Amino acid sequence: MEALDVLLNRVSVPRLVEPAPDAAQREILFSAALRAPDHGQLRPYRFLTVEGDARNRMGDLLAEALIESGKGDDEKALEKARSGPLRAPLVVVVVARLQDHFKVPKKEQAITAGCAAHGVLLAAYALGVGGGLAHR
Image (cartoon, rainbow, N blue to C red; front, side, top):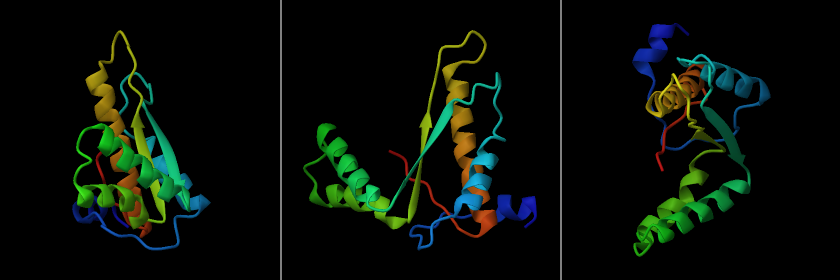
């Protein structure tokens, strides 16, 4: 697939189906993330993968966080939080790991983490496995 095709045609897929990306595909996804612009080469991001029954536990944690935020009185919102991780066989969580640095402000590091996430999404599209973004 041509680079411009990926950049111009990638779309989020709201519900993904089995199978999850295999080990070789995951290697490509995370290798694409490493190509994010990264002033200072800090790699201010980490990836967590959640699959199988762990997705149910993740949904429970998201619902608990909603309750703790004071927004847990809406049953529809709680159910959406619980079921969200079940929309895909593999959930990749992107964690921005911001650090004090004399030359690279945290704002720039957060942008780098976002670019790394975008790299994963672009690679998923190019591989034909699809992907989507959920912000929490």
